[in-house]
Structures are given as structure tokens and as C-alpha cells.
Length: 192
Image 1 (spheres, one colour):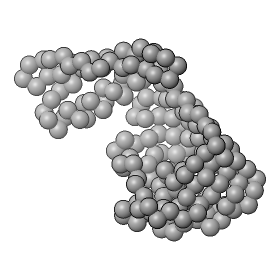
Image 2: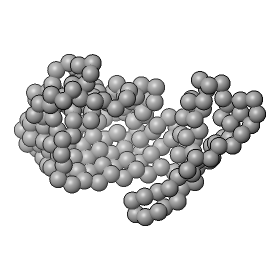
Image 3: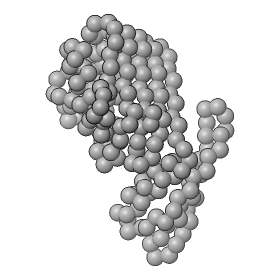
Image 4: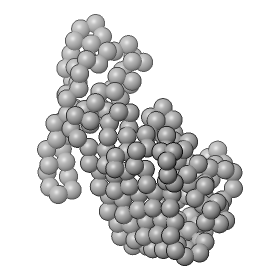
């Protein structure tokens, strides 16, 4: 689901590009040297290819709202034969991650969230794949920063965080997080 900029649903290719770009801009700092949303072929509302290139974008965790939930009054939106979302890399805080999403036969609907903001909802896709790659040290730095933010409100100081990953099968990874924290005494918490 994507937040859209503006207050109304887009009705042209140009309005769709602007609405998706402005919605993304509300969540992250986008590169200023190029267009992030590219639409090729077809006529509104049916396109040959839609690519959202988030390479070099920085997600601002303080600006990311909860996942939008539509009101359920979905209106027909747009379709694309091929959808791609890439970020090589996409930054979250200082951590770099590579993101590649590819889908075929994507159908989107227009909806509104509880505050009345327009959103673009993925209704179905014929098939697709998602790949996210992050170096272990970047994942640990991201984990440490998130743990520090969460613990700060409780008066707890997070001293370190370690992440261990074990591949179970081609689609499953087990994670063990070891956090060293201090409030009055130092303790180690292990989460599996």
C-alpha cells in the first residue's frame, strides 16, 4: 500500500507519477537528481511497466507512519503488466539495504485511510518476488539504534546488540538477538 500525495485520486499518468512521488517524499528523503517513479507504455489506467527506483533514498524512521489501512471503499485504480521497486541501496538510518521487488500483472485500487488520505492498494498480482539484502553489520547497527530508541523512554541504556542468523531452508531464517542493557545493573537479554 502506498500513500499518495494530494487529496484526490490521480486521473492521468502525470498525476499518478506526482501522487506516488509526493507520497514517498512524505516518508523518506528522495534523490534530487532524477525521477523516482517511471511509467512506460500504455494509457491511463493501464500501463506496460511501472518502476519505482528508491536507490539512494533515505527512510526517515521518525516520519514513517503505521501501515495505512484503507476504509474498504476501494475504487478501480491502475494496472501494470510489470511492476518493479528497487533500491540499490536504500538507506534506513545509516544502514544500507538492497531491495528488489518484481511483479507481473499488478492490479491496484484507490482507497482512503482513516484520516481520508488517498492510498494506492495492491489488490492482486499474477506472480512476483521480493529480495532484501543487508550486511550483518548494517542490520546490527539498525537493531541497536531501534533498541536504543525503544529503551530510552523506559530509562534503559542499550550498550550493545548482536544478531545471529541461521538459514533454516530457502525461505526461512532463524534470528537470535542478544542485547546488553543497563538501568541499575547490566543485564543480557536473548531473544530467539
